Image 1 (cartoon, rainbow over the protein chains, first blue to last red):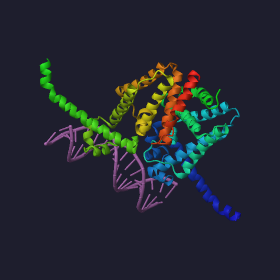
Image 2: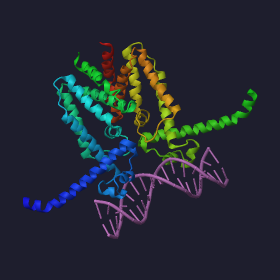
Image 3: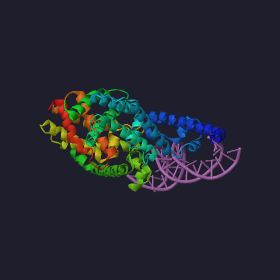
Image 4: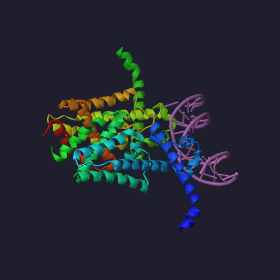
Length: 200
Length: 200
DNA sequence: GTCTATATTTGGATAGAC
DNA sequence: GTCTATCCAAATATAGAC
């Protein structure tokens, strides 16, 4: 069995790897473009031009424009998940909350288009595929479990927390893109939240 | 002088009034459409169809599609401003903050497209005209002066306040459109904010 | 002020040769 | 897997008759 596989599949594997590499290249170009021109300005024609293909050839890799968006959606969520994974959660509640908020807000502030794609519903008719949505759910659960870990298991408390953190994020993007006017408020916001939840 | 004006202008006035009425009708239809299909899905063709015109005739009323968006932008801000004007600000800090937050969050939650247009930058290449932006500034200043009125004159405090309120708004729209999952948290959020600012 | 006609561009997508 | 050719629909916008 093993012999058969190694005898037969190398070609397939290489083809598959090449396919994946091209796909990756297209998605990277798409990220660049939405970052530069806005999420809704993406067009397959322009995307093809950038990766030096005919527009029609993109259909070898993506069934539709929405499929491109769908892959970007999964991409973004995977990236955020990875950052949460790299996070070592402190025993100290305030330090833990600060760290989580900082990861999220800086992630959001880095890329307006990505924020729009992941957390707002701004593309007409687009909704993530079940597979991509599963990644988003994982992110959500990850965030919630960190909060639960520091003693916040009330759903409403979690909702207030996400409102606070996403508020800082969206205000940062809307009113001071590239700056830190709201990022600077994270510690203060976390203190406010923690005092309210646990008392001083 | 007066005799001349009243003799000459009635016709002009009537024509002008008719023009404004049609313009209003078009904008109302546009609101309906963006509410139904999303802000970015608006097209002049479809808009014309709804108001029973040829697409080209819209150009009698609006110089471009962006001009339509611009009028909607001003519309939305005027509406929010009117709601702030109707608000009688209590002497009690907590009641005042509650009222302001409630006005803003419910305004936001009513209409995803309007929120997108007024507070996010999701339409490629669109930016409001100076006249429309002036209305937005008025809204901003109105909100800030209310906060100043209850003793919050620190700019950073105001930023934290707007982050909190806009966070509740965007989460309400994103995670529970049409519901009240985050609207219910307003009082709690206001208590948290007030305690942090003024102590208990 | 509204229409017809039209320009022009762009968009997403499919069929079929190679 | 990439291309040529093509389709088709939709988009914004202008010119000019009525």
